[in-house]
Length: 130
Image (cartoon, rainbow, N blue to C red; front, side, top):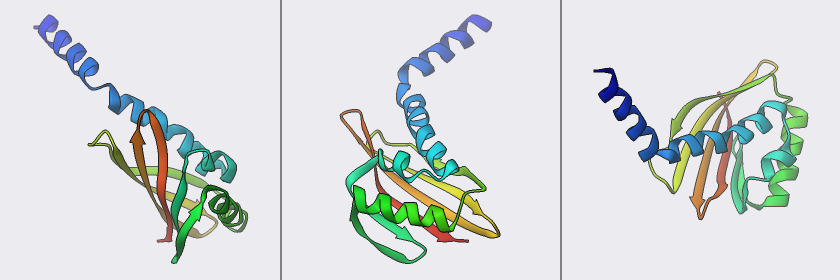
């Protein structure tokens, strides 16, 4: 009984490598938000990104979004960030929801990521007060 279960486990692990890769790819994004590093976060942006900071939204270049987030992190320094939801069902689009704490203010964070040709890019990022 142990051998068939072990074979099934190996088969499932080998047949679904994208889920492991997706989790590994989101880790540096989570780390950048946890420390409030707009420059590290911007490394994962699409050349154009939809950014929403508590209702102030627009489409920005990677550099513009980095500057806006630098200001956001300066005004709202991180006390904690964790993912509370992951949707990695497709190989091309993933969605993550997190909770960002700064002082007494809490934000829900919505991260939308596209994947093509092994490129992992954030195309939409929202910080909304909870």
